[in-house]
View (cartoon, helix red, strand yellow):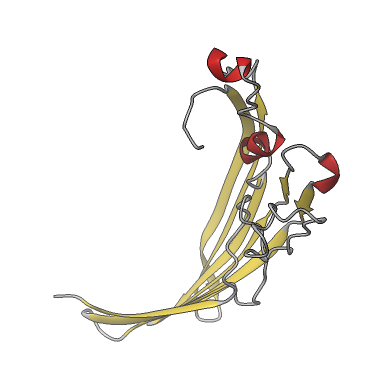
Amino acid sequence: MKFFINAVNTITSGVDFVANYSNIDFASGKLDINFAANFNKTKIDGQIATPQILASNGYDIFNRKEQSRILSARPDSKILLGFDYKKNKLGVNFNNTYFGSVTWQHATDPAKDQTFKGKVLTDLGFSYTFSKKISANLMINNLLNVYPDEIDTKGDVVTDLGGRFKYPWEVNQFGFNGTTIAGGLHFTF
């Protein structure tokens, strides 16, 4: 059975920091440097408001696994260092993004919890302006083909839904598609 309920109050605190330095003369072109960081922590505030009919029948609507979806299933830190370079009609974009660790908690057994370590993903993009009306771009996301840690089920088939998932599906650190490449040709009318 699945249902939505507003049973939990949370408090999130943290800090965001953004800095950029633009129009740096570099190799006959212009370089921009971008830095951004986010650090935060979420906690449950007060008691979980289980409806009386469910509580009296022994339903635990917000077990350890459900709590971890709010508390630890998303990184509590993310840091980006990026460089944008433009020279004449050519543009190059290079970003490194660190996604902090995430933790999945088993519904009832803390020994089956798993923490997925933080990782850095690198993106590289190119653009070229042929004229005022025509430009093209190429973007390579996750250039180094980084994947999340694999699930360690510790013998619990529910954790990976009977072997259907190699990578974590109940925590969202970053995607598990590896390197992706996209290109585009743009016409302005």
